[in-house]
Length: 187
Ligand SMILES: Nc1nc2c(ncn2[C@@H]2O[C@H](COP(=O)(O)OP(=O)(O)OP(=O)(O)O)[C@@H](O)[C@H]2O)c(=O)[nH]1
Ligand SMILES: [Mg+2]
Image (tube, rainbow, N blue to C red; front, side, top):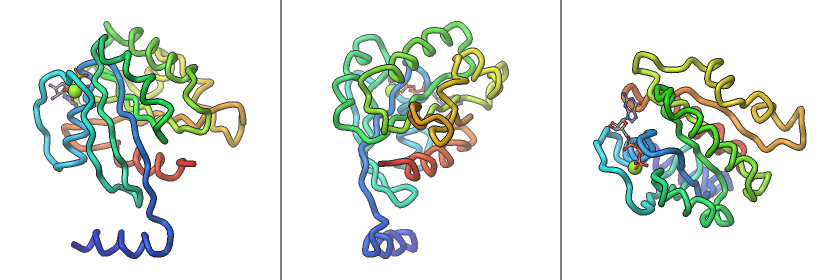
């Protein structure tokens, strides 16, 4: 109730915005878990997402329409179709899946080098930090080869804004910062 009142005030003073958000990443990374946590505030077990799911939610002063596009091979073909219409990207990585980390890196690099307009911010979530054997933040930056991409475009104007957040859906940590950062970097 209190929050709704705040959003109404923000709306009238012009701070209330709308954005379309694409949530992508390999299958099993935690995309649907994130979406249901954001929308319904609870952890839900989902079957693999067969087709795009969209949910609307208000976070950090911005109403996001979030598209969970699924991560299996067939679904990945859709990612590029959504690109022209979106304002922000969340790329979720299972930071415990060392066998598939290079596959995740290839997909992430493909997105960062794609026709995605350079003003679109990309938040990368290194997820499942509650599990043992999870990469630490520095290790993940190394293994994903993200040193260049993470240089803020205040220092390097050729870069899009891109930031890595370590998250756990189980303990509900990290993704709030990612949304605040995205809301701040929307063009
Ligand atoms: N321990 C742990 N498990 C998680 C976390 N986030 C997601 N999971 C689990 O990881 C599995 C896959 O999560 P989903 O959200 O269904 O994965 P997805 O990215 O939507 O996968 P696709 O729909 O196949 O693309 C589920 O068993 C989740 O409960 C986390 O932060 N920690
Ligand atoms: Mg899913």
